[in-house]
Length: 181
Length: 311
Image (cartoon, rainbow over all chains, first blue to last red):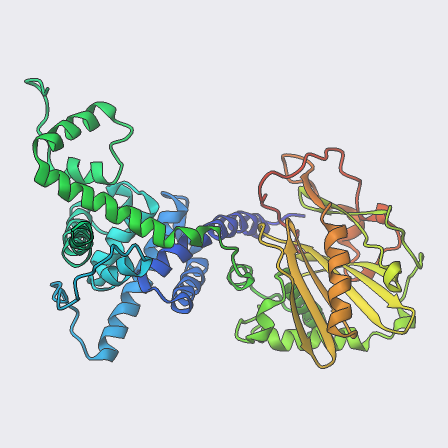
């Protein structure tokens, strides 16, 4: 009574279940990337739709999470390019926003600080450093998740972290020193 | 501290150290730490990196614990439609709607398998509900089922045992109990009649995973809807009573359903039981018809995959 098609359908439904389990991780990554909950959820929904259509391509190679992250990352990059175009900007490759932020008298631990600093990063660097920080992936896995060579992944993470030191970390330390005085 | 054969510490080591990736390799980790002790500038840089990681995790870690809104699961639950009549498709759309939590009909943007919006599908379900005259449901063999009577149904290798809620303190008696199947979903439909003429239908269906039991209300065309997920089951309540009364009923049902447990019957998928398979949208007067009671009642530790055999 169970036809071949139904067998395949059952296997596919296990894939749907595996995908469903990853939704919280996808939402977390998306939120860290774009910072607006509605936009983040839109990205995740697009990701799920695409994953559903392409689920046969996964074929149980590697982890389903990495596979989904790669889909989400590509959707995010498309989104970032479109948004930049709409703003009339050329994507920034250097961090030029160090600018005139007033030195803080108190050490602020608010989350928006790191979020704002992350926002200033070019999208590819942002995606790389957030993935490594949030998911604790090895560089091999993170590179696989983003679909880039390991060397590229490491250099993006490295540049992102140096940029964050300029715009965020060292400023916080300055704030600390001033308060101690 | 470093012997003659020690590998020199590279940038890769330092980054890995900052990311905690050297934790499983204590010898290497110790070498890196020794290096950092000798190079405080580098140590400060690495500490900054680790701090960035902590801040990122602190900023966004909480998202993992948030319950996932139903609309995400609905995207995954779409299936290719099978050629069927409009009436059957209306029933199937209603079942799909119910099995996935009802939330999207408000937005009206999620597509049902045959292309209509969930909003339209819900309209059909409501019309269906409103259109069924109370006294004319076929095949009623028991007018009332007491709370001690379990309702089991088999869904592939997963069985859900739950009690039919006793709403008589609220003036509702169970009038009909049926198993509705279609489109790969199976839903239990319980119809209650109120002594004042009000009517109420409770749909119970298994769902993917556990979420918080927030109860959401909506009203449309004089029909009040309450829906929520609790453990392995999702519930939706449709009634033409007002919202405050709906709220008290919902908590009664919510409490009585809390004892529902999903248990695995066997490690392998079992063949489809004969009775329920042929009873698409047919009423059942007797819990035994739905399948043998589960022998093993281990409580479910975490969400288990289940699959309903498509008709």
